[in-house]
Amino acid sequence: MSLLPITLSARGVGHRFGARLLYREISFTARNSEVVAITGHNGSGKSTLLKIIAGLLQPVEGNVELQINNTLTDPAHRSQYIGFVSPEMALYQELTAVENIRFFGTLRGQHYDKAQLRAMLENVGLKGRGSDRVGDYSSGMKQRLKYLIAVMHDPEVLLLDEPGANLDVHGTKIVERMIGDRRNAGRVTILATNEPEEEHWADCSIPVAAV
View 1: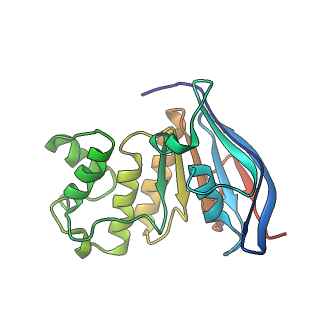
View 2: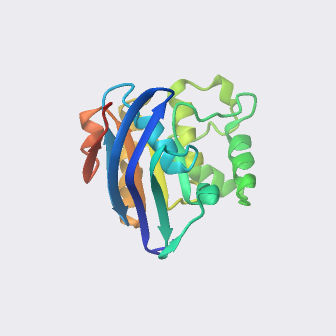
View 3: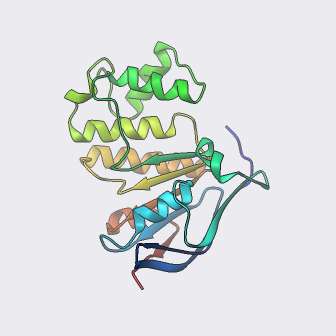
């Protein structure tokens, strides 16, 4: 576990789709152990802002910088420091949960033994379901697996789009615990939500709204 300094900064970020301006002048800074909530109504651009933070989209105005150990990271390689859970995150439906974990782990050069896999699955409430085909999972079980995959490389920054989507009360408690664990480990978490309960998990809120 690393306690290197982490600084995520958004400066004057603005974005548009075609002629429609979503927002402009979004600025904030998040450092070790901080949790930031991006808030706004449906269609306000919360998910788009998370993609900009992840380096998946280039803003039309402003910029986002991620510094690890006081060194600026290359946006093209930012994904190695980031975990991302979103409705658009794809799982391989024809594979089992364990096969999905191993596949995504291999992409990051990570390999897990059976004991590690069991512990990871149990941590998100999927104990005994690792050999089940993901296509047979409920929507809530798929969401739990997304969380497992997003954090298994212990990313410095975790981005959560609609963190409680498809989760029951127990699943929501798992996410809340995970955010707390990351806070204790000095990590940064950014969540996009319009749920007051989830906003309360954060240290501060950044509202986004169409201009």
